[in-house]
Length: 419
Image 1 (tube, rainbow, N blue to C red):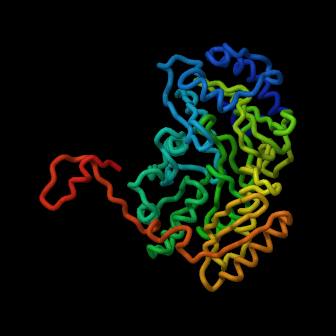
Image 2 (image 1 turned 180 degrees about the horizontal axis):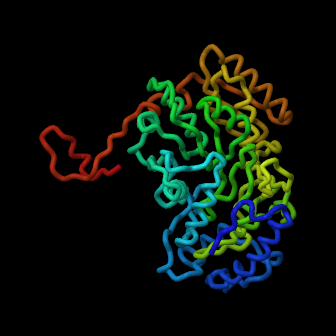
Image 3 (image 1 turned 30 degrees about the horizontal axis):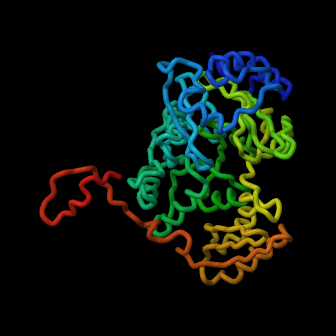
């Protein structure tokens, strides 16, 4: 089956027709799933939401709509918001997954060497980038960020020595690499041409700062283990939802009303999912969706991923606070920060060189109080290494396989260790 490609429709009305033409097949596929057979399948406007708890209750294969023999991979989410959820994909599902991830405006080619620095294991993120890169002929460096075998010191060596051209990681990771490279004495990475990032909210100020630090474009991606890639950037820096591959709705958390656009919690109905159809899946991320025109001409809705907004004193989110931190002048060198909310009091720490301690703390305090006058903000500067220890940037982990025979003087307490 040919999957839709950007350019197959000429306006938002054409995009809506594409979605409506595909929905009957989606509903029919859902009826083959034990979960939806029991719940019942209705036209999408009448279909109740599918929640993360529904996926947990259906563990492991209650959502399966194909034979087990047709599965290509099984995955579980990180479980950061509760018990993990199971997801599974057929080979045809993987074609869809890899195509969506590869919709990067900078492109992925056979000439590229791409470092994948997100988890492999049960989460989909590392496997997704790996599959997309290989389908385009690129060389993959599988530098899983959950493995002790690739500490930051090794990452920057590989980036430099292998002439890595593309990377895939959390945005925060790129700043940790830059700090590790600075400590290790690496001055430039001339082969690098773009940083692909996702997995956490990324504001314009931090994105711009990362781009200036590395001197290359930063290309953002948004998705989840249960769905794969849901949105990516056009060359104008706008995040677009892949609405030719899924129907997107926004739920007002106060009223429960679902609308095509606006601010609220994202709801997703994948259009080309064989193994695990999802109808109105509530992904629980707060977003802002718009159908405003974009110069790219893709005719896809735009999205801002806002992150959590549950601070008691008002509409303060991680993304909003991040924008203020990375709005500080570059010369202050503030890359790392953390904050803790307690009622209407906000305690913030920033890592900053001694010469800029007073200026940086004062500027950030004023910025927070100006943007959020009801919040009592207190900013404390900490010295370099105070939030990200130098040892983390320079460590070389001891990696060994299990062994049984040791020589005199060797530490046999490591016999059963495996990292």
